[in-house]
Figure (cartoon, rainbow, N blue to C red):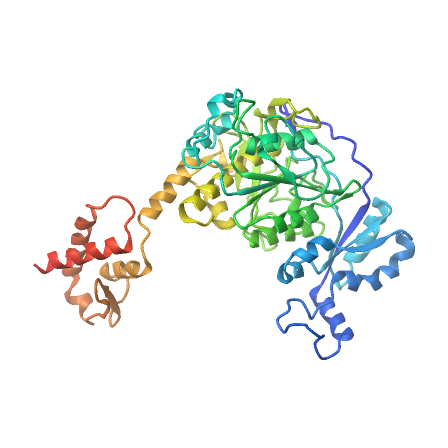
Length: 550
């Protein structure tokens, strides 16, 4: 849910959305059905390596099953695949197979949906069945020239650590160029005066609710660097949006993620500005990945190379304590039931340093990062307004924090792509943004919301690491010199000669020689500044050997 002036806002009246039961059929049941229905030989044109060809999909499997419940469900109930027909045609066979086990059953009302989900979930051939979450308020090249953006001075989250993420420093190296960014939620005002020039388009779905909220989120990440309003953290990123409202009367977070991931490229960043509730739970708002289909959709996107940033939600829940309807601690890192979606999960901290966890923020070991959850200056009114000239200085919640971390991820990917030709993997991005290099909260042991990214510290550490990154052959050579590897009767790499057999007595009779050789190499290396290339290392070592020989 969004926050304005630190207060929760009343949710708007949600449209009448048909309730759906999401069902995942076990692979064993789908395979057994396929063996009964298929002839022994392959179908004409079917390849030997077709993924999932030995299992019927859940849509076909559940056709008979749902007939058993038809009378108590409704004559109007209908079954559909989890992945829409358009996405099925575009997704590769391997990726589509991940969702073949899912189907959705639309029923007349929530009570019928809950009854059906309970009965299906008890079946041995069903892995999970639950009522899909309905509309929920959202949780809450040339350097960038922010000087002509009149509200930029209010954007303290752009400042140096420990106050902000130091985007202003990072702009000297990158502005988001070359990276795609997608915001997933329910509505936006894309023609806002500080967003229109960004050319933001909608991938799929309907812009239907909480337009001011979506507008505020976009402003934090990609507000245009012009003479109006503020400036986004990554203003040159290529931005698009995708809606949880698939049509005016259908709503699905999982389907929106699948659609977005299908349209994105490895290295791009997807922001999940959403939260949900869970049946059978006494808690309030939770991260959307507690729904199985949403979890699988996130995992699919991450496996495809897409960085996913997920709002932790404004439920004031200890996620380590939360359990699903089956009593599993799915969000407690280290627990036997813990599962990792690969998303970067974001909590909310105070705007003033040292940053303390805000009372509404979900928290726990699953949270990777935090950012400002109050006093965020951005476009729109932060909730339901559609004005094209409105701004707010009091946006917040995990909704306000998540775009800040998203912007940091976009700048990191843009910088990495420009310098190396390829972006980081999603796992590497999460590692850097959540590492101890970054700004801790005021009391990490009790806040439990991770760290706030510090782009200057991250960029400089990466460059420092690269300075000393050398070819594997030199790593082994150094280990042999220091006696860490038992080199008898192994090999040593000699510059200009390659691998040479090592004297079995090397360890006993040449300890002094190894020390002198290492010292000689160190003296020669001091003459070089910056990253050492393999060619430079060869020259250094060759000169050191000659010096030692004299």
